[in-house]
Length: 68
Image 1 (cartoon, rainbow, N blue to C red):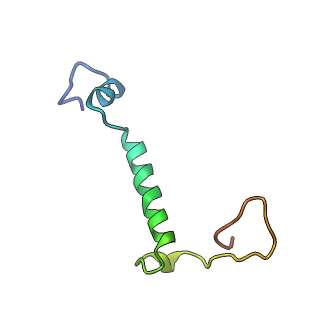
Image 2: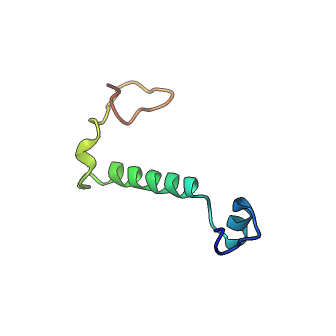
Image 3: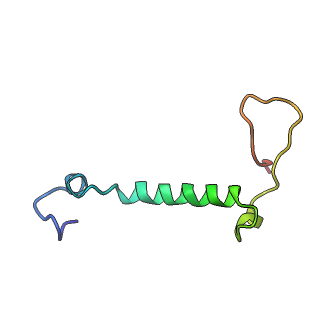
């Protein structure tokens, strides 16, 4: 960003360019990848997840996977 907008600070240059921070973009990509793996059983990385948890009781916060 310093090459494109040398007068501005990093945060201001991102705002002017309409770009989110690298941290935010990586977090969004990671979240999308995990959701994709969980929702598609035929995804090539789905075998790396622990087996899904099935509870007969209604829990306050449902866990999708067994905790090791």
